[in-house]
Image 1 (cartoon, each protein chain N blue to C red):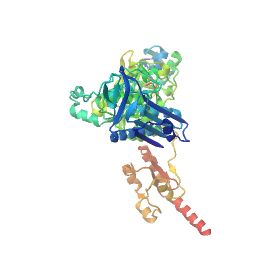
Image 2 (image 1 turned 90 degrees about the vertical axis):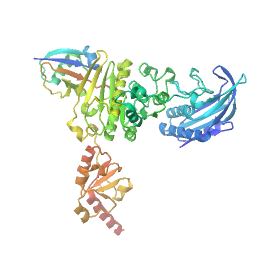
Image 3 (image 1 turned 30 degrees about the vertical axis):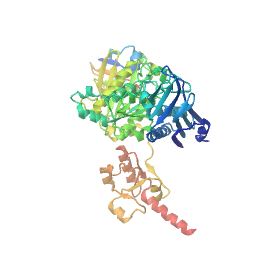
Image 4 (image 1 turned 180 degrees about the vertical axis):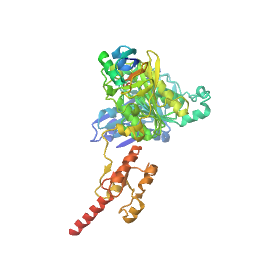
Length: 532
Length: 80
């Protein structure tokens, strides 16, 4: 696997470049070529010169190809950009991506060219027919619009949009201005600083996600993660107002990223072009202060919920049906009632209609998404009135709202999340020998009491934390990775493991059979050796 | 007989063709009333998929109905 970005001062040979991303593991190869076009903004272009601040540009370019490799799971990403004098029709930039399957290759290729045009500091001097010439800073003239960063000196294949974007010379953007919200007594400079340090993950960049993302970016939330594996469809546009018809077919996470970066360059927008699942969410959720579920199906909402609850991160849920919506805020740190306190398990998708099946009017997700943005800001700013242990029902035909109390389920303290997940996996692990525990990457924790340990010291390296002390202070092993608890026969360790899991520690297991099982085996093994 | 006010949301509203109605019933519990209303309106969602709130709070299906109760039957909703 490789991701490379480079500049070339001589003509680029596409065939040679293609050979550099060839890989027998790849069934798909997508390339993009940008060519020097003969016209720009009504002026005939005869040729142009490219200049780059090479050190900086290469570093940014390498970052982009590495992002593409990681985000789309492709095997090779290569981008070569020309510098120097180019004539009409000449190849200005080449991007090639190879991957096991075509879909990710297309998406990664599109991502690279869009990001390169937007982020890499390259300037071009256009030579016009009238004898004039002009410098254009690519980064600036790529003032993003919903239609993407394709301003075009280079003509890309399958040219799919016009040149409505003004090709004005670099205009210096004014700084982001939060004065209107800072004027609120509850916010001020301190509140604005809190928002700047805040990190919010938005799952789903559709009808609910669009207002959430727009308002949070506008408010100056420091980091905005966007997870969405879908591409834009024309039927989305009546309610997803961030996008344009010319964007159809492109990944929404990337479209939204481009729009939000243009809306507020202060915000660090991080796109994740993938479906939200337990596996994709688990490593991410802990990095955020609030997760906002803007998904359109039960399975995803519950995956978001469980990941957030396990990480102790607050989560804001909304869902809609035709003219109505529901809103629920689940507090961080395991406090309050959760989604599973209300709905024990995810309703099978398909039982009740989604937007495609049941229909929806555009402002409905607009209103519910705006409420999610509001609740998120209330959480981040510690404003009063947050929906707490409640579900809000909103009917936009009658304009009635209902705030229903949703008390915490008595079982929630023992883990609604765990109770709702099925089937329960075994908490017991068996190894070939005790040495295998560490070799397999587990920390071995001996939970026997002091006398037991003194009487029969463990034969391998382990950490000694007596059972009661561990139950009183589970934080001792929290964050230490995968942990195997060991007692004499495996029964105390199993009970302790179950108790810790109920408190949210999911990376703890019990050594089946306890120490005695392994001492017996070791003895047998020694006997066998001496026989041989 | 008990008289209660019933509010419908989402697919229930569609199937009942009304967002609320006042019902006088022999049903003793929220569950029994839902069964009665299902027979009348042809609700397609099983009770096990639904939630019920009584007087502003999520409540068990076995809750006993009292005159004047505000009953809200809430289907799950997933659109986004």
